[in-house]
Every structure is written in structure tokens, then in C-alpha cells.
Image 1 (cartoon, rainbow, N blue to C red):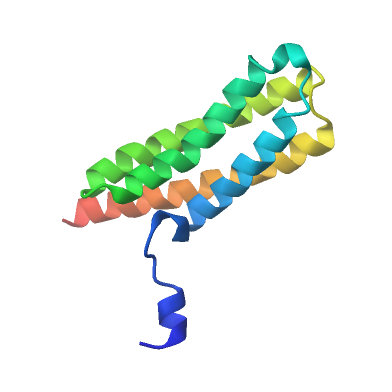
Image 2 (image 1 turned 135 degrees about the vertical axis):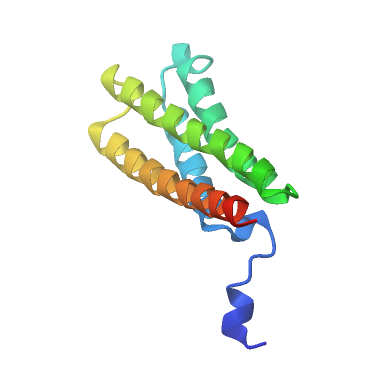
Amino acid sequence: MNYATLSSTIRGFTDLHAWKEGHKLVLMIYKVARTFPREERFELATQICSAAASITSNIAEGFSRGSYKEKLYFYGIALGSTTEIQNQLYIAKDVGHISTESFTSLYKQSITVHKLINGLIKKSKAIIHDS
């Protein structure tokens, strides 16, 4: 086996592009949530951080499941958490907790993650359909 083949082998959940991009989003969300006003630290900040962590946690859990039906379930939850973050970003922007620039950056990353999770879901569905 050559190096190119080895480097593209997925050995763990951290090798999934969806997890890698989701992890970037988690770090971005945690960083911006620290800037929220004190009164929001246990409200919106907690909710958005929890939703962000849920994305990568569910990708990881789905990856470890034995059947593609189970994988599909957890990838679906990760997709829902991504959409939840998108909604919370609108709230944070509209109440003035984040700038339009931060919103745009975070939202673009959430779209990337959303697309990658959709890819995992489509692949899982195809494998289920073909089996």
C-alpha cells in the first residue's frame, strides 16, 4: 500500500472531514460565546456551545455504530444540531451579541459542516438501500 492510499484511509472519527470541519465550528463557537454579555453566559451561550459540541459528538458516535441505520440516526442528530446553531447565530446577531462579520464567518462554516454531514447521510442511505 502506498502512502497516498494510507493517508486517505479513515481509521477513526477524527479522520472524517465532517468531524474536522465540525470541530473547527465548535472552536469558533466557543470563542465567540466567551464574548457574550454576562447575562447570556447561562442562556444563549450555553445553548449554542451545547449544540456545537453535539455536532461532533454525534458524528463520533455514529461513526462507531455497527450498522448504517444506526449511523444514519446519529448523523441526522448532528445535522439537526447544525441547523440549531444556524438559528442561534441569527439570534446572537439580531440581539447584538455578535457582529455581522462574525455571523458571516460562523454561518459559512456551519454551511460547510451541514453539507459534509449531508454527504455522510446520503452515503449511509445508499449503503442501506444497496444492502
